[in-house]
Image (cartoon, rainbow, N blue to C red):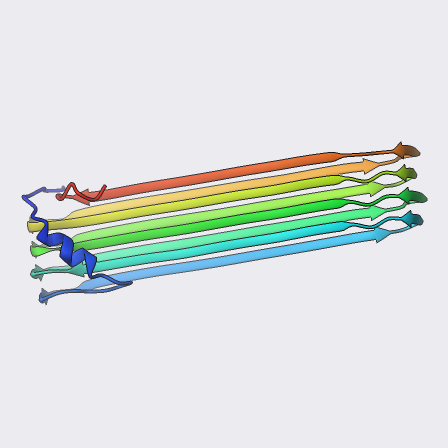
Length: 247
């Protein structure tokens, strides 16, 4: 059960001073527990193969993997007199897998050939800020946040086989942007009892492009294949008890 009391802007100063895992207390009686677990795993693989049979001219395979992952968590428990437990727990996990495979095999014969371009871009941001404070807090203030972002992107391109004259031009692109933000805040001039806040956010993105311009028996000129996957996921959550000035 959540009880709301009159809040003054003085409680904002207790939250503003917080760095990661900070406890700004004048008097603290009892346990003040803060726990944060962050895990980031990024796997990128590019495989390019050109040749086989007879290839005249050939050329131009370009692959790019870019991944940026940011995990940020700020936990603050403080202010005035706190009797009892102030528990904050945050778990963040970001996993990004990107793979590009390009094959411009001639098979038997490829004249000209060329131009395969693959691109994987992924940006993942996980932010969590938890603040528990007040002038007088009696009892437990528990905050828990779980964030999980998983992005898998794959591009497979193959041209050749049989007889291909000229051929060329396969372009594939995977773009994924995932942002998970959670802010939990429990402040009060007087808080009696438990203030429990729980947030769970999960974003999963799977993208794959397969392009095959195989000649089979005979392909003259051949040509252009273009595939684009774009994904943007945003999860925002703001939970507070009392103030009404944050969300």
